[in-house]
Figure 1: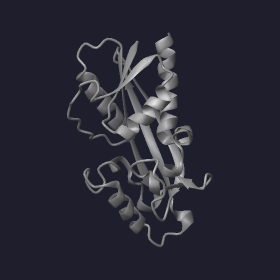
Figure 2 (figure 1 turned 180 degrees about the vertical axis):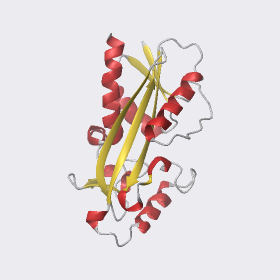
Figure 3 (figure 1 turned 90 degrees about the horizontal axis):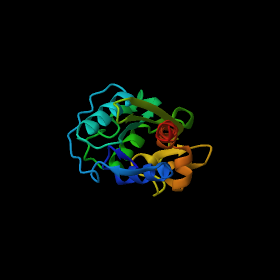
Figure 4 (figure 1 turned 90 degrees about the vertical axis):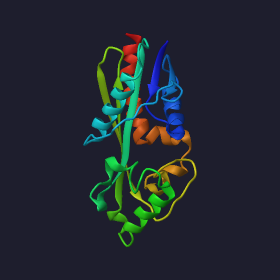
Length: 203
């Protein structure tokens, strides 16, 4: 059986990853579960570059693990009114140790007075895979929405409570896990990557 090691320590993210990749013939582990602790400097200029940097760093720390596939994602929120901020700096926006409640409140405050039609935003996720033979794959998923006026919902994490989906009249934090996986940026990117991996694992 293959091992898929996902380069994250985020429990919420791992839950989503496991749900989506559940039917692959592979054991899905987080970095921590795989016993990998490595400092990763994300100095890329795009979501794809940062995802590849993370995946390669973890792959380099694996040693001789046969058939291990390393996955990493880089994702973030792009707000059009703020010229694409926080973008690739979403996780580090206002400092990595700053709570998302504070980050979300700050973004809402920065959009004070901005009319609904100008509050457009999107979540972007790039996923990179480093295969056992060194081949690198990347996929991208995007979900369009708007920035809300307050935090709503308790199901998501990060910026989910302020990311409003007009078509569903809810924030991504108000969706069930199954609903979110079906429409989210990470869900879209992971489904595309799952298709790529499935073809190779069965080949």
